[in-house]
Length: 224
Image (cartoon, rainbow, N blue to C red; front, side, top):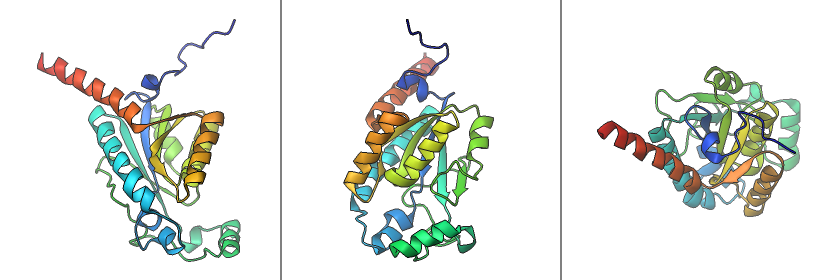
């Protein structure tokens, strides 16, 4: 008979609790979301991200803050000295060697979202925010076990971060409507892979309802 090991986080309520969770906002930057950014310039359709992903994400960030859940922002920086030879080859091969996310540029700046002074910003130079960054150490120091993943793009940087975090023994959950890709098929394909192989896929409504319920109960206790 199979038994669930003690301490295993099997429920969404456990995975998104204040003591266990961090909301990770990945690469929500002008070059990947804004009109006239890099993605827009290479012909990608950023409208769905602007119109659907971003409004849901902004609401989820506010709900996380109200619940006292740590919000971590990830910012891609692709300065020339940060690019490996394989990355340069890929850019040349795909015809996408136009610079993007250069330090201090408009393209590298956040789109619509804005970290608060006490919220960490993790700089990354690869798709995955877990590779050669301070994120793993930050999470371990704060006792974080579970990551809620959001941002751009679902099939590249969000998925890569989630896979690597899973291999580093974090629980990983993707918030489907708070992630976006420039191709709906790629978005849905990434969600299906993630749900099958790595972690749960949920909606922002499912998460926010739990956080809001906790906030309301805490408010009632304070006023009692």
